[in-house]
Image (cartoon, rainbow, N blue to C red):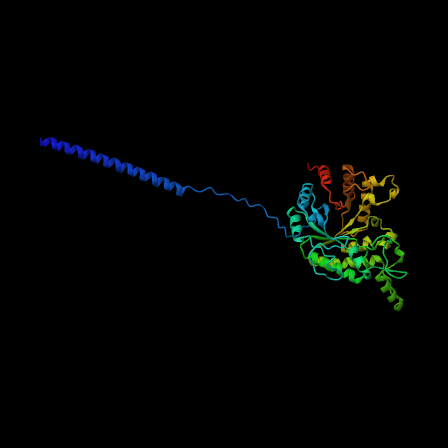
Length: 405
């Protein structure tokens, strides 16, 4: 009997030990699983986002001239609309590397915020353009940013302040047309010149690559023989007291003004260019005397000159052509080649070319003919001119011409 109890006790003890051992093994395994899982979570590296550093273009650094300039002109109003960036994107796709935008226009509006200096009043200042933003937008696309500034054509000021206009030889104030309102200031008036130079100084500090002067000349419309300019009155008085005094010409006045503007631009490492009247490229004495645009004299102080050689702006039979309006190659080639002939060797020649249908059969052949003329004349590029800034079709033709599609 005792033996049975002993055997029963041993059996119970054996089962208890086995269960305990199984539980220990189970707990140990579970513990290891937990530890292993924890270790895996700690040891497993998280997925890291690989940041690829893109090459950064310094949008504040001035952009130098490309070997061949391909420019596009935009008004201040286009700059101030949502389509501005869309136009730039299309221009970039067509290889355009230069943006020209208005800061002072023919009406006399100045499109940046600045002090009312000289002849400027609140009527002139219309600050709708943020130059810094325009420069950044251009530089982001590797385009030069060029501020266009109209000089002596200023309707607002001419109509407001007759003292700044030329005098009439018969008394009173001269204006170019009896039917139209006055538009021109006296290009030799010291207050007029100083105010314009102040505007150039303000713009040059804003980070633009270039300042392009337009209407940097004397008026040519109306009865010019009746106009008496400030420099002529000054010279007349000096000649009376000094018989050796040499009377100045209009070309001397324009050259001196351009040289003063150049000194300002050089201070801020900004290039200076000027647009010239189309016919001036032929450098006939009558045209030089009327406009004051002597290419030889002007280009001593300019980095580039922009002859505006649009076929629609010449007489139909100019150059003994049968249909000059629709012979764009001839007029652009001739105007560009002559400008290069007379310009200083260090001055680039970059003509404006017509990018609109005024008076001409505008299409691919028209724009291609102009561009080919620029290339064949060994000029330094071209700038598209469309006053309404409608360029999309023209830019498509340029891509086709350059085989960019």
